[in-house]
Each structure stands twice: as structure tokens, then as C-alpha cells.
Image 1: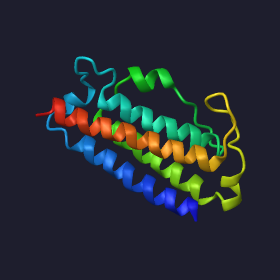
Image 2 (image 1 turned 30 degrees about the vertical axis):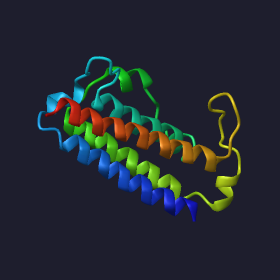
Image 3 (image 1 turned 45 degrees about the vertical axis):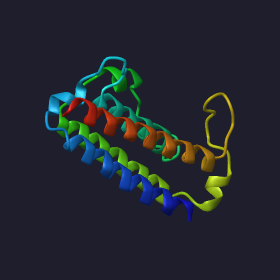
Length: 147
């Protein structure tokens, strides 16, 4: 079932995200921006957690989560809170996906994103790709700034 596949992938990659953050030798570098790079690894991590908490947890799971996109890209927290936010997002993603049926994936996602309608399956695939795009950026950021 698609929900089990997505659960396995998101669970694995949230763990990879936390591994990347913990791998920084200098935890201050998590919030550094290199010349020409717009976002720090910390802000990308906040963005990933909040994005999924919103689009999966709040929209599909009907949680009461309220997204603060401005904070995602401008705020800072300590490493412990960053990891806790990732774990909270991972939990809501898994819990929500466990409650979806195959039929749920074939219907349109409840809100329009990018100005168009799309199936829930399509949007979940997009969200997974988006997660991994930024996970790769975080890996590169760590290797670039934390030598």
C-alpha cells in the first residue's frame, strides 16, 4: 500500500535529517549561510518539519498545527529543539499516513497548491521529493561549511 511505502521513506529520511544535523562538528555552523547560499541547514530543517506538519498533519490529519513560514526561514532554535521539531513532524506524518486508505490517495488533495488541483498521491510524491531535495542541500551545506 502506498501509505506504508511513504511511511517507510519519510521515517528513514527524517532519521537521515537528524543524522545530518548531529554530524555537524560545530553546532553553530547549522545556522551559517555561505556566500551565495540563501538558507542555513537549520532553516531548511525548520522548513521541512513545518512544511510536512502543515501539508500532511494539518491538512490531511486535521491537526491544529499552524504554520509560521516566516520563522522557518528566519528563526533559530537550539539543536535539541530542532531535533524535537523533526520528531514531532515525523510522528504526525506517520500517524496521518497510517490513517489514509488507497482511495484517499486517488482523490484530489483537499486544497489547491501551486494554483492547481492534484491528487493526494501526486502531492505526497511531490512532498517526498521536496524533502529529499532539501535533505541533499543540508548534506552539502554540512560538508561545505563544517570542515
